Amino acid sequence: MSNKPKILIVDDNDMLRQMLVDMLSADYCVSSVASGREMFNLLKAENDYDLVLADISMPGGDGDEVAAQVRKLGCNTPILFMSGVSGLGIEVNLPKPFSRDELLTAIRQALAPRGR
Image 1 (cartoon, rainbow, N blue to C red):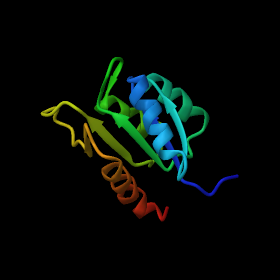
Image 2: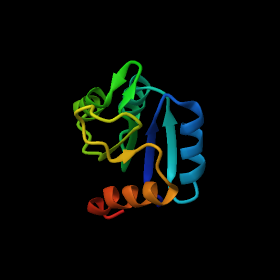
Image 3: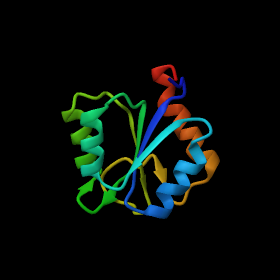
């Protein structure tokens, strides 16, 4: 069993999702899904993720729905929202495009309260 923090990436953009997996896999245990529905099904099966990194606007589930699904499962997992669209009414933690350093800093800050 790895001591690396577990991150779940939720984004409908296949290229971005794979880039994030590749970028984070050295330091984190990373899983990824393409929709809020897939995320919900995965979290029902195993909800021991330390962080969810999710796109705010995806077909079949926006940021509000993603957050509601995570909370509905009783998860206290922090969620970092990414978006290339402004003015959505939800706090965007990572405006797209973001650098690798910006991503890693946001992840470290989100994991800090959990001692990870």
